Image (cartoon, rainbow, N blue to C red; front, side, top):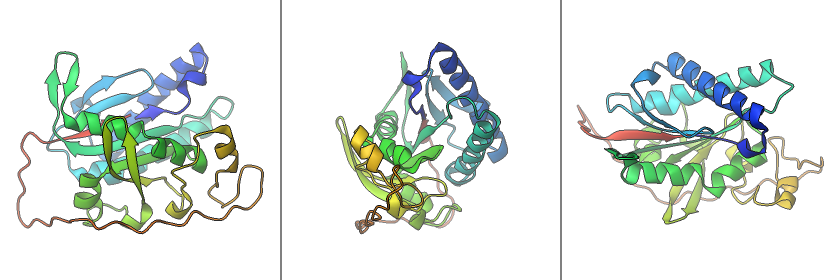
Length: 241
């Protein structure tokens, strides 16, 4: 997870943002029943890379936790209207991570870091004006969301193609309360683009109506359905804040 526009805050506001980030994460994890004290956490001031234990149910992270995090952000920002809002980008991926000398190693942490830093996710948060934007990788979308294991529906997401550093892959973005059809993954990359970006109501920031971005047709995907017990020993879920 990463705090939006953290670098624009002064020193005191950065301290507030770090404190508030920990507050909303703790509240959301408690409400969702995913004990945060069991996470392998790697904080970075304005964010965090977390590897969750393999026995944490995927649907609880992708469903309950993200909903509770959205509620926590709304409550926090309403309680502190004078300061800058706390707005977060969250990436979720299911992959393998291993402890290393200076943190964690493996493709899992790489993928989740590229997703949270992607222009597509930044644009979704900027153009929507929301407090939270969530991106999930292909394995999470196909195995958890598309199979109906969470309260989030596949139609709640906007499919995007992420190209970030050495990583290229399909991903799916969800912004609470926002129609995915109006999310513009190309917006937010310049001041002009931000001014023209559609809001949740389908209007630009200057109040003029903008045509909704046409929703791109979904590319074919492969869904795996398992019956009975599935063992995923040594598998981890990475959440990059």
